Image 1 (cartoon, rainbow, N blue to C red):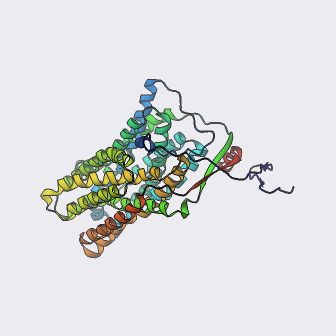
Image 2 (image 1 turned 90 degrees about the vertical axis):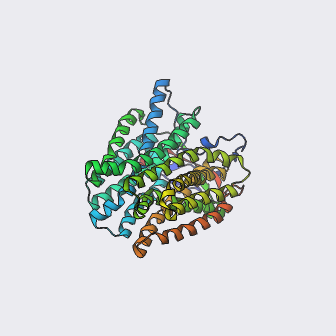
Image 3 (image 1 turned 60 degrees about the horizontal axis):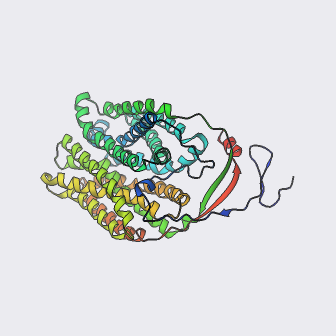
Amino acid sequence: MTLSPGQRRSRVSNELLPTHEPEPLPAERPDAHDMNLVDEQLIDAEIDNVPSPLMPIKGRRAQVFLGASLVLLALNLRPLFSSLGALLPEVIRSQGLSPSAASAITTLPVLCLGLFAPIAPLLARHFGAERTILALMAALAAGTAARGFGGTPELIAGTVLSGAAIAIINVLLPGLIKRDFPQRTGLMAGLYTMALCAGAAMAAGLSIPLERLLGSWGLVLGVWAIPVIFAIVCWTPQVPPKRPASHLGRPIVRGLWRCPLAWQVTIFMVLQSMLSFTVFGWLAPILRDRGMRADLAGIAVSVSVMMQTVACLFAPVIASRLRDQRWLNVVVVVLAVGGFMGCLFAPLSSVWYWAVLQGIGQGALTSIALTLIVLRSENAHVAAELSSMVQGIGYGAGATGPLLVGVLHGWTGGFGGVGALFLLVGALAIYVGMRAGRAMYVKGAVYEVRVYERLMTGLAR
């Protein structure tokens, strides 16, 4: 049969899909005065699903249990990073690793955030967000437990598996909060942010005491699978029955990858990720190298991470009230980099003050980098596509931060070169932040392309 212009044949059946030309969707410009930025930071990975996933009808008790389950999930998304950082000197001594090899291991989970985050919407479209999260939490538990065997191959394999799971869950959880708690989004977003930071702080502060108690760094890394399993038990009742296939209209966004402003927002995310994950992975070893006790170094990182929680709650609100975010970007970069420099070079007696300053600056920097995705987007569809671009490249390229720290440490035998590296990163972040902070929208046109979900579900089999 001859195909008419615009038609194509289904790969699932022999039927012809209907002729269709892309239809531009009307822009939905947000009102800066009415916008709830804590709400709008929650980019919905399922925004392009038609029909949209339905918010479950739940009683008050069930809603409380659902909220607690989401918070438990978030609590388990950061111990992977900070637990290894606290124990890195023990891992290096036990396995005979070079600083470069150690930095490669600390880089793996960050690299996974960039590599696997873009496939989250595809998995959610085919299997549902709740079902996808359940499967990935099981993968996170398996990967975390594998790290407990105490060998380098198990450490690498478990880190990659866990990092991939975290990358996808990272993208899906905010959309569920926005969908299932439309009247309490601000509260739930705050609890979600606090749980992320609390998990990182808990792992950073408790890993050294646990290592002394258990006598093995491997057991300490593996023990963090226990709260993951508990979260799985709580999350399992939240998985709904699989929905039948139905007609799908899938909006697509074109032009973002050719937009200079989109790249400026992305590079700003790259630079902040380089610093953020260096703090998670290397700040404790740096402080220990300077002569601080191992347990105090872990607590210092824990304090810094907890201060990030405070800044994460307030920085987006401040950003939303400003006409543009150029000078705010400069201020938070100076605070974050300045605090890190103090931890590197200031007297050890003052490190606690610098850790607090770094945490405030880093928390504000991270949350503003995410907020810019919304502020530079004209509607929710553009925001979802820009989020995929920014987080995919931002975390993937941001993995070079901890990697370069290990390489420089291996070359120089100290951390002086690390200070020079992040002074350069800070200078670049100030320049790019001034560009990304301008009151403009990225150039991305939204089109609606109608296909049949039976085609999509057939391809998923």
